[in-house]
Image (cartoon, rainbow, N blue to C red; front, side):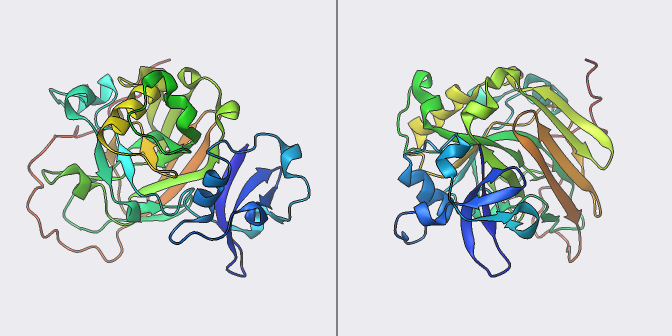
Amino acid sequence: MQYVSFRTASTHTSVGAIIGDRVMDLGTRLPAPTAGLSPIRRLLHAYDGRLPTQADDLLGLPGFPLTDVELLPVVPDPSKVVAAPVNYTDHQAEMNQDAHIDALGVFLKAPSSVAADGATVTLPYSDRRFDQEGELALVIGRRARHVAAADALHYVAGYTCLLDMTMRGGEDRSTRKSFDTFTPVGPAVVTPDEVGPLGELRLRTWVNDELRQDADIADLIWDVPALIAYASSVMTLEVGDILTTGTPAGVGQVRDGDDVRVEISRVGRLSAKVSATGAVRSPTRGADRGPKPPASVTPVRQR
């Protein structure tokens, strides 16, 4: 089953399940409003992170045509976005880095950076390089602390596509990746039963009509259970938190007017536009510092 956060023309905001070409509104099944929690986080609390996986469980709910709703970020208000740096060996090679995730740990992106499928990524500076990074992400369904890798998948509500937009330079990762609109995520949270074995998933990213990234999720250095186990040993993972698993080789510069798409088999396709409208000169001087991305896009490997 696929779940989305959405808004209607009447400004009704809710969470729904996609069945055919309609969004079934689960708003009537939500517990009383909880201060600061979006509908999808309230739904995850109500179902203890295990969302219904059968259409029969949703019979009788009101619905809307999918074309009549505005999709929001799958979780509009995560308490945090936890990200994995250098979690593919081919990306480590293209960035010429001497360390990967097992030495770097994880980093945080600002929750305010999340954006919806179809959103516009706004480049803030006219004198800096910005790259696309397509990734598999997951949504935490149950509060997690010191979770063993063997139990980690029981804490996953579902999977989604994510773009980790990045400014290159020597500033801290959390700064370079946390600009507003720099984390498009969606379009839906897909329940684990529908996604199936993670090792069979394939990730591809296009910029305009150029295929830039093409990788198997099986090639992650730290797989999803290992990532959850480590992150939960550092910080408490709250319901609705987003964990993103890292990007493979093929990162490259994006510019004003570009269209970016991430597709993950059995998970979905996420799209975003790029705009430099209003860009100004960067107030920081890290452009010539930090990891060095390739001057040209790493060629997609032959399959």
